[in-house]
Length: 165
Image (cartoon, rainbow, N blue to C red):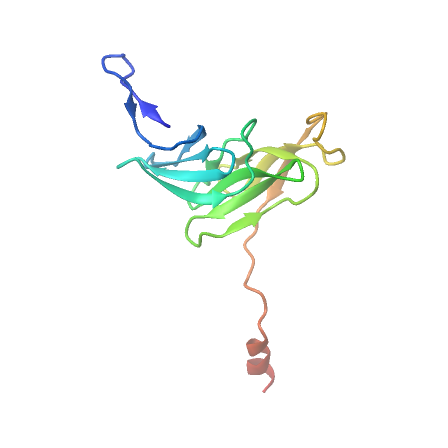
């Protein structure tokens, strides 16, 4: 659960959530009206800071230890997080408008510590591109910049008909 108390210690802690899980890795959006966090071993949740209502966004393999902190994109539309695939961490983006999740890496090695660039056009991460993390941990990682690009929707056959009929 999440708790709050005055910084001067003048009052007792007040419980904000009523989850029966280990909550961790709290991150705020740009105007501090929402937060995201990991709950238990398999949930990414959003917390509305005006009423402290928590909402499940994603069920995935976060495991219960050593997780990267999720984070909002600079425009607050997307949430960046990591989840495990075959003992290795992949980087995912959750779109709050469409509720779609996209795996950005899928490489078979761990990508960790993702962070947005200030303009939201890149994601920075650390990885050893040639050696899996399991079982020895991330050895000799380098930093990488992953460019993000918007793509048009897939070409559809009905457009073909319009062009050549």
